[in-house]
Length: 78
Image (tube, rainbow, N blue to C red; front, side, top):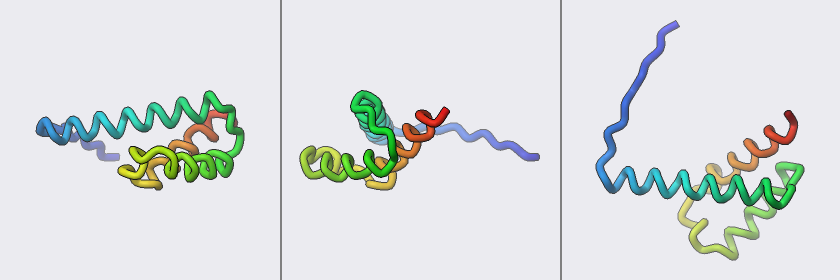
């Protein structure tokens, strides 16, 4: 099996965008955990309501945000 390791050397603007994405992921992950959503469907429904209320979330892809709910739902099952 071959393994490859790639290093990123982003410019300052790219690094700032990556940090913002990670920050939004962290906030959404914590939001889902603190509000005790048990099913992925509940989290995705809450996510749609949050996107209407919070304009900052409109800047991020919904698939990325939905993947956070999948991660939290998988963590609850363990």
